[in-house]
Structures are given as C-alpha cells and as structure tokens.
Image (tube, rainbow, N blue to C red):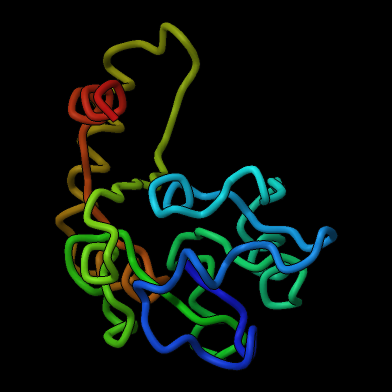
Length: 175
C-alpha cells in the first residue's frame, strides 16, 4: 500500500491511523478501492473506484496526486518508493520485504486479517497435452531452485514462491 509523498501536511505519524487519513477530501477527489479499505473503517460510499489498465498507470496516478491510495506489487512500485515519490505504508507479506525495512507488514500496521496475494504464472490453452504441462512444470520447478534465477528475481523486487499446477489450483480455489 502506498501514498504520495507530501499529502495532507506531510507524512502521517502512525500507520494505524491509515483509514482516517484516506477519506475523500473533496467530491472530485478519487480513492482507489483496495481490500484493506473494506475492513478498516473507511466509508466506502464516500470513495470513488478508479480502474487502471495496469501497475504503471496506477503508480503514476498515485505519484501525480490523481488518486490518494493504491495497492500495488512491490516490483511495480519499487522505483517510485525508492525515489521517494510515493511512500509505502504496509506490505502484505508475513515478514518485511528486502529494500523496505522501514515499511511494516500489514499485521504490524494494524491489519492482521489482510491477506492479498498477487501472482504471475504461465497458462496454456485448454486441453494442453499432459506431456507439455509436465515439461513446463519441471522447467519452472528447476528455475525456482536456481540461485541465478532467484538472484535476478530479487533484483526485480519479486517475492518468489513457486507452486506447481496442483498446488496453484488448490490455493486459487480456497482464496
């Protein structure tokens, strides 16, 4: 979760005050709806939902002051956070992330029930032959253990956790 720098008289003093600081200030002001808003007391009826085509337009709008709040992957927002154009408020991960040591986890910030998982993966057409699925599964599993691959993922600010096809489908059905 991030907010633009310099908003509302400077940096907020406490992460747990988040819901109160992100209420609409004017009728024309927009707020991106993200899951934390629903469980944190923000009056949803007083917000406007803004949909973007991807992470880059979202964080650009946030940095430009066009939205007050956004939930984005670390890899998409890293440059603007590190350049101090937006500020990370919390990470949705069990532990603090490398490169964001001063940004608390959602649990530390007062949102213990917030559980959002962003994922990326490979997909194929329906009825993809089992041999092809098995080949890709083996290659991806091997890459997930490759130190050079994991090092490159870390450089791109990717938090990497490999799940094979069965585990992925099981977790997607329960979340």
